[in-house]
Length: 143
Ligand SMILES: [Cu+2]
Image (tube, rainbow, N blue to C red; front, side, top):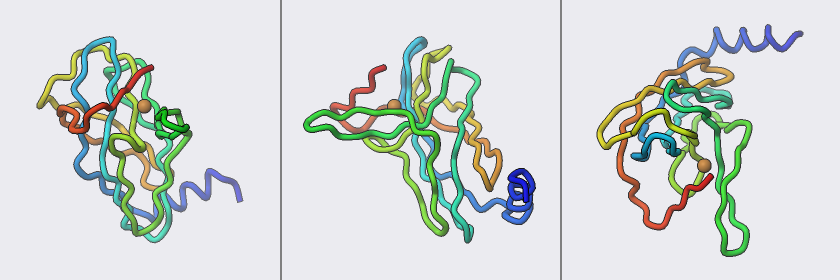
């Protein structure tokens, strides 16, 4: 059976089993980057995969993970995040996050911006994230 057909079968049988909770992003300025965080709850009986994120106000959006190398902490792009069935995956500072690179405008505290998330099973989901100050000290986010 071809992959597209399998995809369509899952798509039609799954319904909306993915719930996005508490989406927020770090305040930032035009020309710089920010990061988007949220909890992704999968209430379905099969795993789902987040493989792409888009927004209309940045040059590029990537899915990132952080890693440790001795004393150093870095981050790198990953092609997707798998959310196992009946579980919640949390994107948070110092862990997985959505990197929003080269902003076309300032992201001020309290403003809301829309993102589109693409899941293999749940399809396309739109979320509105609220801009907040980063709570954790010493979090460097350099590109
Ligand atoms: Cu990053």
